[in-house]
Amino acid sequence: MDSLTPPVPPAPPQPRNTEDCFPPKDTLCRHDEEQHVQNYDWISALPDDILIEILSLMTISEAAMTGFLSTRWRHLWKKIDHLILDSYAFGMQELEKSRYHENPLLWNDVATRFVHKVNGLLESRDGNRIKELTIIFPLSSAHASNLDHWIELAMAASTQNILLDLDNKCCKEGCTICVKGTKVASEPYDFSWGPFLMVEPARWMN
Image (cartoon, rainbow, N blue to C red; front, side, top):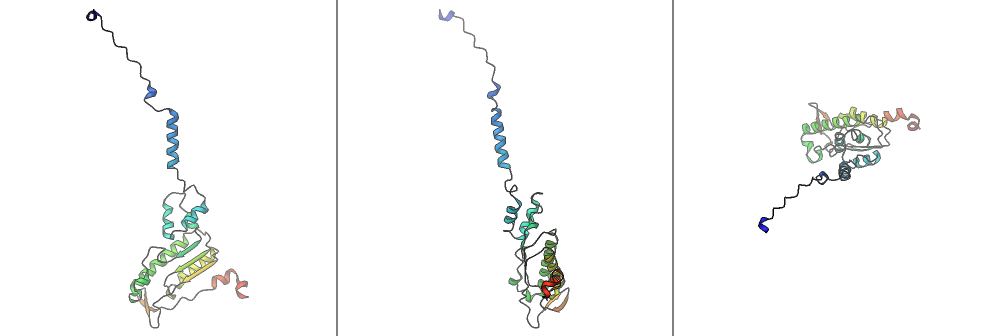
């Protein structure tokens, strides 16, 4: 009898639930939100004061490079108000370790590059205030015009403290340095009081 029983036809395929193929919409939304949170630039969202404080922990050349990150960072480094400008700040060769007094051409080349970097930096600050300006580099009277200019820029930026450490360790009797191909006596820089007298004449004359 079993052999004569007709086979039972297979059950028709059930329609597939398309919702099983895709995660729920709310899951997608949560994923997008989490991805957005992960990609959000939390550092750039900090207040200017905090970002400037962070930048002040770097050398001025490192801080200036952050200006290429985005428009948010483009001008922040210019608001650092404590400037220490020396060989290290600009990633330059330290003359003190190069026996530069034995190679005046080397001294002149490095000093010229240092002067150009300081000029570019101070003039690019767009008039932002400077509380303290420290310049440490072996310069002499040969750079008097640039040094005078830096003091004038510092005064215009309402600088409270100016420190010029221009100790030229080769400035001994009879020592000479090469400036623009000619040998001149390495006389120390004569600090200019002119900008101070013009700003507050009564204070300095009393």
